[in-house]
Structure formats: C-alpha cells, structure tokens
Image (cartoon, rainbow, N blue to C red; front, top):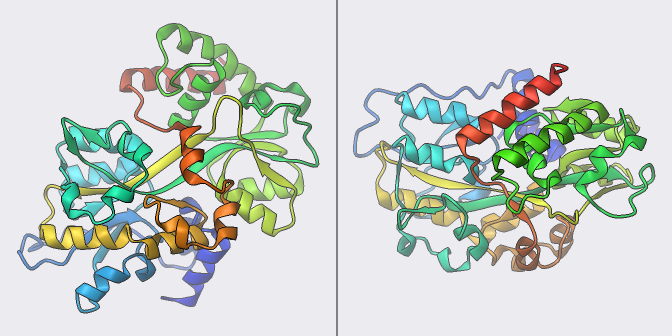
Length: 370
C-alpha cells in the first residue's frame, strides 16, 4: 500500500468521510468499480463492498492463508443508501458492510440472502447484545454479522465546560450558545429527539413525542455553532475552543487526547448511543458460499479485532478480541468491560420510515428558520 495512504489512516483513525476526501486530494479516488461483464462466472473472485480502509490485509489474514495469498476484490462506498441503490441497479458484490440500522432496507429490497451461523466460527463469542438487535435477525433467520462498533455521545472540553450531571441536555444549556456542534445526519437527529423527550426507545417515537421534540430541536438549533459532516473539522474546532461540546465519536476523543486537548466523552444519564456495522451476504454475488464464509471468519477473528481496536479505536464484534488487544487501547475506548458497557447503551436501529421522514422534514424546517 502507498505510504501516503497508510499515513492518512494513522492520522485520521479511519474517519470514513475524511479518508475519502483525502484520497481524492491525492488523486486516488475510490469510485465504485463498474459492474464487469462475466462476473457471473463460477470462478469469479470474492468481492467485498465496504467503507474505505477495511480492505487492509490485516483484517483478513486467515482468508489469505487459505486462498494462497490471493486478495479479494473491493468496492468502496461512503454512503449506505447510495451503496444499496448501486446493488439494486446491478452491481454484484458478494459481501457488503452496512450498519445495522440500514440492514432492513437492504433486506426489503431483496438484495440479501440469509446467513448460516453454523458456518461462522466466532458466532458463539459475538456479543449477545448484537445478535438481539432489530434486523440482525428477522423471519427466524440471520442477515447481518456484527463486525465493528463504536459510540456516539456528547464530547466536551473539560476545561471549558461545567458539567454537574452528564446529560444530553447540555445541548439545551444556553451558557454554551454558539459554542456547540451537532452531526448533520437524519438518524442522529431522530436519536437526539428521542433522547431529549425521554422516550423509552429513542429510535421509536409516537406522534406526541415527535411533536414535543420539535420544541426541543428548535432550542438545540439555536445553540449550535455549526453542523458537522467532516470529523477533522469538528476536531479542529474543539482543539481551538471554538466548539466546547458536540455530538461526537470515541475516535475523536482519542485523536484530541493525543493532541493534549482536555476532552471527555460523556456517559449521559439517558444512555450513550452505540452504532453497529457488519457483513451481509449479497444474493446476486457469484462467489461461492465457502469463499464468503472464509472471509467472514477472517474478519471475525480475534487477530482482526485486535488490529481494529488498536489501530482504529473501534470495538470488534468478537468478544475474544478484547482479551488479546492492548489493554490501554481498550481503555481508550472508554470502558474496561465491553460486555457491561453494552448493557447500558442505546443502539442505533432502523427508524420507521414514515416517522423518520416526519422528524427529518421538521428538522429541515427548523434549520430554515421555521
């Protein structure tokens, strides 16, 4: 791999959006490869459709060992909805890497085939909380193998913010008006709306809660400095003190601590948000099931998880990975016992499409000044 690319990986801790932008600046665009005529050939090489950075051989050493060192092919995406539409339009990878909150849409579109847990070596050591998530299992079959996960919460400057009680309501604290930032993404808006109205499931609001959330989101909007889509932009603003509290990821906390910034991720009383991404099997892909499960098993190996934890600051789906990873790297994720930590969080799961659209339309109206 080009040294420039490796340096970018180290620098950005694999923030997906930043990585794609930086590669473009180097003239190394990651456009999805066109569908190649003849891919239906039975001898076609396995193709993995994923976020940039997950093609590194450190994630699939066991696959290389069992396939005479032959690398799979890779397609890359930076947006899951766009990725789904490409598959619907005829792109034929064998495995893809969506997050659990979008898996239902992939399945409803008829793009997936179910998985056989008996062929997945690490199945019994995958965190049980993940296997119980909506859309991981549906219609008595499994559709998603949890691979990587992480947390979203309030990250804040401990030297610039007074926090008597850790809570998502910090976004409504007018003392920090104009000094806060929020991720510009519909599902995150839906989540914060649910958290701030005190919903039992923040990803499933009733009509009264959606109406109530409008008032709260309007207050939140008035306190924002800007909405971020670029993780490095957020980190720069927090390092300078322009922003003192934000919706952020654990990887930003790791990055900012390395710069000597006094930063912390909250464990709010309402619960932290946890995202989970993983592998799905594409029905139209021509590769054999044997190749697919060989690759899945390589990605789920403790060695792969060790690399993910230590180099990307993300959690791994296989609980055994935390036993072999550097304890300091595990602690940097914000916990010492991942199993206990996962019991206390809120998971990103699919939002009913009609409700999601209603919240999103309301949010757009608020941002437009309505």
